[in-house]
Amino acid sequence: MAHGHHSSAGPEGYDTHNAPIMGPFVAELLDAVDLGPGAVVLDLACGTGFAARAAAPLVGPTGRVFGADIDADMIRVARDRHPRLYPDIEFTVAPADHLPYDTAAFDAVVCQQGVQFFPDLAAPLTETARVTRPGGRFAATVWAPVDRQPYFLAQQRAVQRYGGPDAARYFTRAFTTTAEQLTTALDTAGYRDTAHREVTFGITLPPLDEYAHAHLSALWGGLLREAGGEEALSRAADLVRDELATHLAADGTTTLPFTAVLVTATR
Ligand SMILES: C[S@@+](CC[C@H](N)C(=O)[O-])C[C@H]1O[C@@H](n2cnc3c(N)ncnc32)[C@H](O)[C@@H]1O
Image (cartoon, rainbow, N blue to C red; front, side, top):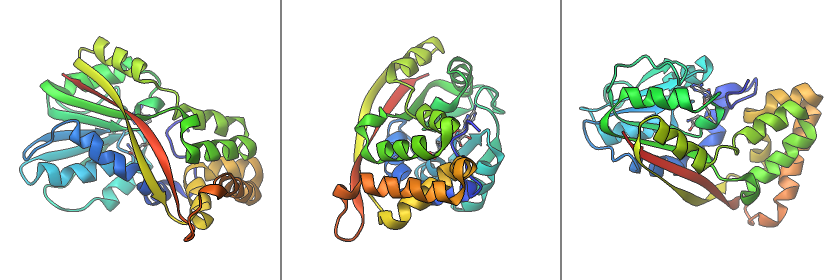
C-alpha cells in the first residue's frame, strides 16, 4: 500500500495520467548523471519506467538500461509500454535494499520520486552504492513541500477530506523527505560530492474537467472509493477543480508550478 499508487485503475492509469507531471523532471534527472552512449544505467523504483524509457536513447545501442521496482504491477506496465529501441530495457521486481545486480555494475543510478516510500534510506542507498562503479553517478528527485505546489495542495485537500486517514497519510509521505535527509544518508552510504538544488517547471495540465478526476482515480481511486464510493471520488475531483478555478485558461487547461528537489552524488 505504501508504494505510490492506490487504485484499482492501477498502474496503466498511473503511467497515462502522471506523464504530464513526471515527464519534464526526467530530463533534469538524467542530465544530472551525465549519460552518454554506452552507459549502463539503473532506474531505481522505476514504477512504469518514465526515466528508464527516456534513458534508452541517451545510452544508445551500446548502452544498457535496467529498471527495478518492488511492485509487480508497475513492472508489468513498464514491460508493456517501453519502446523497443535497442537492447530491451530489463525490468525486474526487486526491493531497493536487495538489488539483483553485480557489484559496480552501473555507471549511474537514478530514482525519481521513489526514496520517500522506502522504509528507510540507509539500506537502499548502501545497496545503490554497492551496484555503482567508483566514480559513477547518483541522482534522485523528491517533491518540495506541498504548500508551494498549488495542484498537489488541492489534491491533498481533496484526499484529506474524502479519502480517510490512510489516504491522507500516504499522500503526505510523497512530500516529507528533505534534501538534508537524503544528502546525509548518501554521505553515510559512502557517496561523495553530494549536492542538491530545486527544479521548478510550469506544467500545463490537460483540461481539468476530466484530468482532475482521471488523475485522482489513477493514484487515489482505491482509497477514495473505499472511503465513500464513486461519490467520494467525484466530490474530491470537484474540490480539486474548485480550488484551481482561478488558474484556468480559456481552453480549460491550467499551467501551474511544480517543484522537486534534485539530489546528486558521486560514488
Ligand atoms: C511515486 S512512484 C514513482 C515511480 C517512477 N519512478 C516515476 O517516476 O513515476 C514510487 C515508486 O516507488 C516504488 N517503491 C516503493 N518502495 C520501494 C522499495 N522499497 N523498493 C523498490 N521500489 C519501491 C513503488 O512501487 C512505486 O512504483
